[in-house]
Every structure is written in C-alpha cells, then in structure tokens.
Image (cartoon, rainbow, N blue to C red; front, side, top):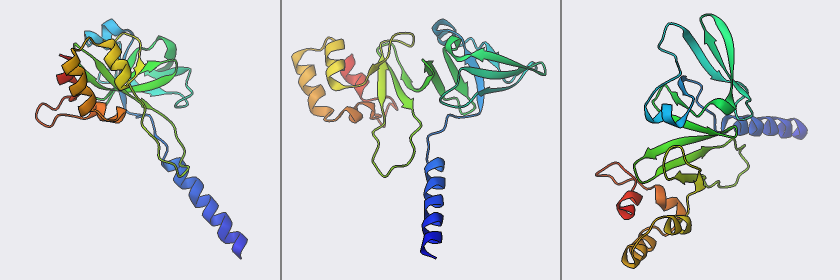
Length: 189
C-alpha cells in the first residue's frame, strides 16, 4: 500500500515539474529575419496575411527550425536565420543560438532582455537571467552592475547614486511606476 502511495506522489511530482516548466509562447504571429527588419518593423512572415496560417517552433528549446504553414504547405525556416519573432500578446523575442530572449525594453541607450529557460521544478529558487545590449542588433551581455558601470561613462557622483540605488543585479530591471520604463534609464543619461 505504501509503495502505491509513493508511486502516486512521484507521478504527481513529475506532473507538477512538467507543468512548471517555462514554455515558449506558441502563439507566434510574425518573424523578423534581421535586426534591420526588426528596427523597421518589417515582418517577413506574418499570420494575419492570407498566405501564412500558422507559425510554430519545432520542439521548443531544442529547435533547429520553425514550421510555417504557407499557402497550405509546410515550410521549414532554420532558426539560425531568424532574428526575432512576435507573439499574439505583442511580446517580442530575440533568438541567439537556439535560445530565446524576451525583449523587455528598447531605448536608444540600452535594450533589456530576459532569457526564456526550461527549468524543471527541483525545489530550488531560480534567479531569472537578465541581459542587455547597446542596441537591438548588438551582442548580449549579462546584466550586472559592474558590466553597466564599465560600459557606460558615468561621473563619480552618478556611479555612487547608481550603486546605492541598485543593490542587487535583479534590481536593474525595476520599472519606474510613473514613466513605465526601467529606472536604470535615469542613471544612463
């Protein structure tokens, strides 16, 4: 009897683990093939046209291609040639080496990202990995206070205010309630 309870508990834990995994949104409505296309909002494949009926990543988080149903035929587009995609809720994701990065904020000073990861439930607290780039097409770097202080030329007073305001790296993505923009931007001006 106790072995049956153990099996049931194990099965429930496995179900909880799978349901708690981060999932890539499957309601993709558009694909950008380059940083220039993204900046100009030129969508290469878009759902709301008559030709494209469906866009979906194949085997989320390990995909080598996206499947696009175009004029009734399946077309495979290699993930490595896709720069970014947009979902039905207007979220945008950048793809780098088969990893997905949700674009949190774009400005002339900085672009902020959150990595979309597949993490099974293991009872540990996970820290969300955040990244930044100077512009939408430039290389991603992990978002840390030290990297930002090295990257941006701040005066000594600005540096001290920055260090005082952002005690932890996760504080760097805090949103200003008035402007609805990251507080970080006020320190990078």
